[in-house]
Length: 293
Image 1 (cartoon, rainbow, N blue to C red):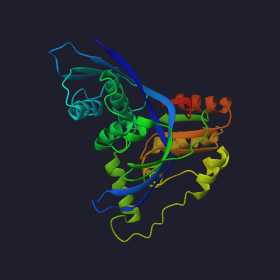
Image 2 (image 1 turned 30 degrees about the horizontal axis):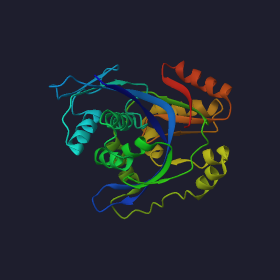
Image 3 (image 1 turned 135 degrees about the horizontal axis):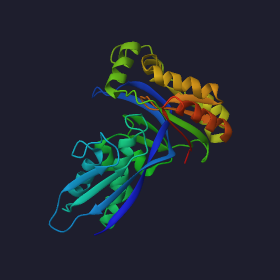
């Protein structure tokens, strides 16, 4: 029985904005995504011959163990793509907060695709894996390749981008309030008029781009932006409080990732990062010090 393991890394958004509505009715976005050093570990085990089922286990309660799980759908889509039937057991060891805007589910699906490809003697190349991933979720292709990208459209049109220098200190925290992405987009529509005649002008990313390309962490942090903060934080008290605590404890800048409710802060010293994480943990809330990749 062959067994492989892959790490599915979380991401943060250094910039996230809505640029309009596409013909299919979906919101068009512009986002800068960066991989960080928090990951779930995905272990794939090939089942005995004759068992062609896909099964899932997880060390955290509440994770679906059937086709509702993106890892199941990723494995099924891969096997259909190469025309092979084999039984796979997927075990998920979770460290990425769930439903937090850090692409935990997408990271797990990406790791599943990389792992099952190894079990199948690398039958597909990265481009082909990304095509499968993109059919399942817009963040999955990014999670397959990692690093830093700027993405547009529904998030599936990606180009390489310079992110924060590897090893930039972060504190990530999530109070577990939960944010429905459809709800968050609906609130944006209500506030900014997307889908109607909207006067909203997307934020320019020139200053962020220049700062990142020059490696100026301070300037880059100051020029980060997430449109979802304007509608989510007023209605998610814990997330707003986490942001304040990060800023009060030395964060150069704190911001929400994705549609939330996770918050991350950029720090210039390990001492201040650990102090901020400790202050949040004292509230009984998940928080950890990590770095960019």
